[in-house]
Length: 264
Image (cartoon, helix red, strand yellow):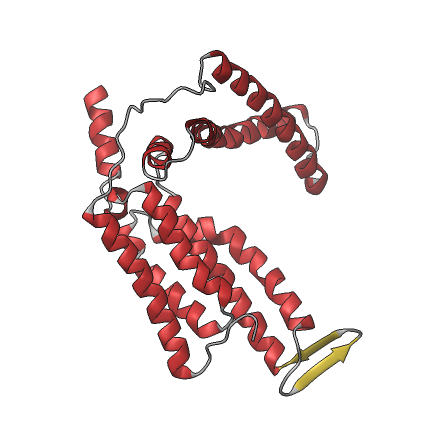
């Protein structure tokens, strides 16, 4: 049984991105995000999204899974574009004006650019960290980034408890449904369950912190790590690939004349 589970875990972690060090993934996320945070045009963000979609087979995540995890971002994307649509500096043809809001050619272009940029900023996070192992991430942060062991262990403990939120939410939903409580008003049910989940999280975090402190995880001595985190040539390829994606996106935007910095 143990051998079968080991083989299954190996098979499920055979994607190209699984061999990239978690610390390098953090660097790649910054490389893919910083240029998009300093520019505001639809072309560069659109090209970045297209190139990232082409990289999905390298991550080991299916297109359907990516789409499901992007669903909250896609639902909130119009909210980000709406403020630009109404309150961006007007320019070109003005279509409507009321109070302080003005809809014009420039505001529409800004709204579209912001909406696509939201997708371009969220997609790398989903692709890079959906399959990352928390223990490998902790080892990379401690051995490669050289962060303090106490901070790394806290991040590891918090990451390992994230999955419990889903189980708690499902258990509360089943318990409330069995008692016939809160089924008529879904909004009220959501906020009440979210508050209960927050209380659970605080209590669990307090118990976990006390248990870790009792076991000496907060001691100032130099710690050893069960897993060794190393850099490889694949990490260099990932960094070069991230730079190439951003360079191509900006180059296309400059070539078509739509490139624009945020402060311009």
